Length: 94
Image 1 (cartoon, rainbow, N blue to C red):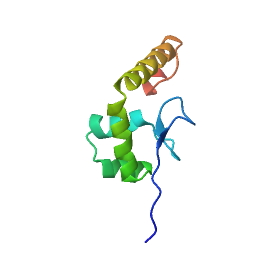
Image 2 (tube, rainbow, N blue to C red):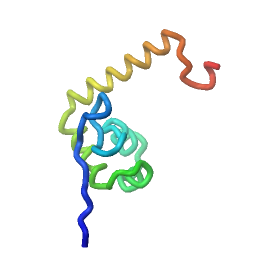
Image 3 (tube, helix red, strand yellow):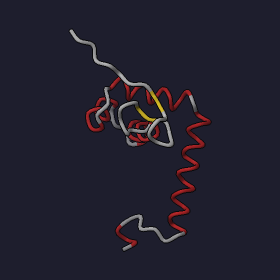
Image 4 (tube, rainbow, N blue to C red):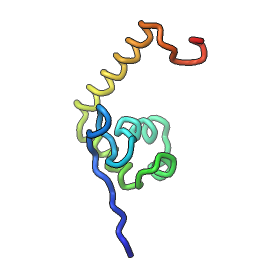
């Protein structure tokens, strides 16, 4: 039986930690599982990584709370900056 390679958490594509070989960020996995209450298997099926990688992403999120807080703050600042510049963020802005 062939073993399936599972990824690691890396920072080579995005400006935040993500699952190696995927453009799925640790923050997004956390948001889906803990924020939207989706099962890790469901997140894996919908986004493509192995379910073990979803659990790795969740572990990374909880093992690095300061880093993840910084990332969330940076994201919020970017959203606010976009709103201040009049960026289209939804259908009500059209």
